[in-house]
Amino acid sequence: MKDLTRGSVAKHILAMAPPIMAGMVSIMICQLVDLYFVSGLGEAAVAGVAAAGNAGFLVNALMQVLGVGTVALIAHAVGRKDRPDANLIFNQAIVLSVLLGLLTMLAGFVLSRAYMRAIAADAATIDAGTTYLLWVMPALALQFVTQVMGAALRATGIVRPTMLVQTLAVVINIALAPVLISGWGTGRAFGVAGAGLASSIAVFIGVLILLAYFRKLERYVAFNPAQWRPQLGQWKRILNVGLPAGGEFVMIFIFMAVIYYVLRDFGPAAQAGFGIGTRVLGLIQMPALAIALAAGPIAGQNFGAGNDARVRETFVNAALIVTAVMIAFTLFAQLAPGLLLAGFSNDPETMATASLFLKMISLNMVAQGFIFTCSSLFQGLGNTRPVLLSSAMRVLTYSLPAIWLSTRPGFRMEHVWYLSNAATTLQAAMSVWLLRREFRKRLVPRQAAAPDESAPAAPPARVPA
Figure 1 (cartoon, one colour):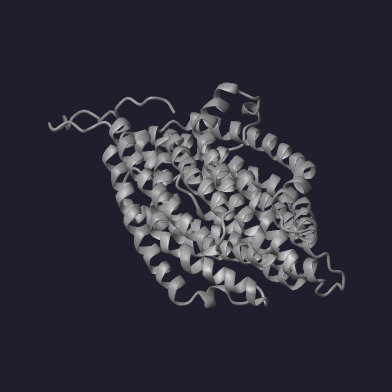
Figure 2 (tube, rainbow, N blue to C red):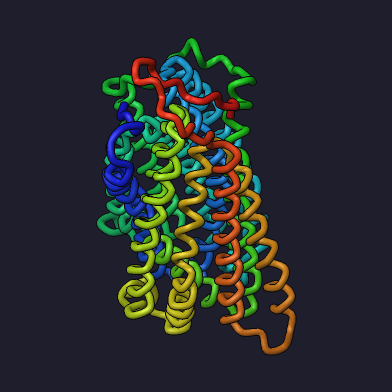
């Protein structure tokens, strides 16, 4: 366990962010490798896998429910020096992760084709997306347990083991992708099914390794079968913090689904280009997201310990670092989009769509950085409802105008990105305003008078999350 209530806040952020980023980048690279090898199967395969990948937002929503609730409550317990509560939360979250993983896999097997029919442009895209979803569903189900274990470690200030396991799983996935997708060395190509199967095998191996780490090396939080009996009160604590954060991912899913919907009249190449561009944009945003995620446990431990000034300091430091990173990557995306997109498709129309998307959407990267940072601070404070509110506003201000414009004469693809930039900027402004309001409500002002040095400082009373 690492005590984040002492020492330089900026140093804590910069120490935690690289391992977090390495883990996320490795996962994103895995997705890009899948797209790279799938691109050889044609536009419909790329569009199908890209569109199917959007269903991952729904699964990520459920994962966020567990991950955010686990991080916030364990971080608060660490700040209070309450190890028994941290272990109870961890074990109850593990029980929830198994339950939600099983439900996710069942829903995926039943609903995959219906989902693809709702958003895809043609029959070939529907078939490709459905096949990919069916084979990748075990990976998505297993990631619930991984999410909880990683969240528990991050709440205690430990991020390196999760990064190493994620990186190893990605290396396995990358090694398996050409073998299973294209038939390298075997002569038996599984196509898009191979992409999903490679992910499922890699995640399964990663889960086994992380379980071994917890059994052999982790000391602060640990598996305890005596605490696996469902305790609805503890589930409520986790869900009260996690559900609004999961709702944020549902909003992202709706946002992305609307984009796929309004793009389908432009054909499979447009959807494929958007899918490629989205994944590349996600990759270059990873450093900023990692910095924001590092800020969450720091804020959480200090909030639990009553160090209100350090909570505010965490936001200021994270926001400044994230803004600098986002400005640098905005310039990169504007000046050299071709370097970022090279090799993902041989179709000129697909690449033109991806390039247009990247150049226009990258203009709101600074705003997106503020959204990342505010979201992480809300998680640290244990109140994620404002995150859901700002995300819902973004969906509302984007979706209705986009759908209406798509029915009007002269509708162009650029209109989709103009609306997206406007909605994201508005969400960023609202997120900052809501966070400032939350600070005023939940952070207790320090007394002007100097405290008695002879008595230990007691943290201000907190309302349980």
